[in-house]
Image (tube, rainbow over all chains, first blue to last red; front, side):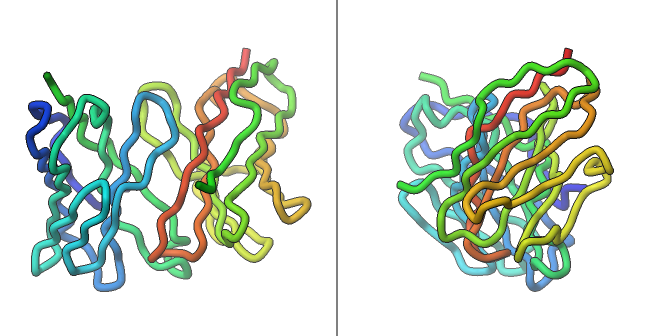
Length: 113
Length: 114
């Protein structure tokens, strides 16, 4: 089962920042937080991941709370093409959990003009 | 930019037939995965593969399923005797290492069992 909780849907105005929350209160010390998104039925697209420090790349920023029990994905200037289902995933160690990604239902983000 | 490629993009098969779904992972990647997504449902893990053997499989991955890396570049998923409920999108993924590197997904094969 997924170890994360996300709101089922969110709206965001085009050009504004989209802040997608995720709770992962049972995360353990060696587990990473990953974010993926899926547009229609395309293959999931990697966005960003982190362990405990905040991370930023060309797509997004990831803010992880100090206790690591929750995180927020930030898309700084959302566009219509960012409309997708966003998945927050806790990924464990290969030799304990196979390095697999366990997808939940995700958050359906709608970016509106 | 390197990508995971899957063929075919769409396959239609009759119930009871065998199908092989093919994937070419990113060339220097070491870990390989298959996932499936039934229409309208979430993405489900099937199997992970490392060092020429299965490292983990889900309860979905029963005796009807098998995986192989026949030639060092392709990674295949075989379904021996397809059922109607096997109809789904099947995604292949690969990563260079395990937990601290991103896994890249292919665009999927839509399998329709009639």
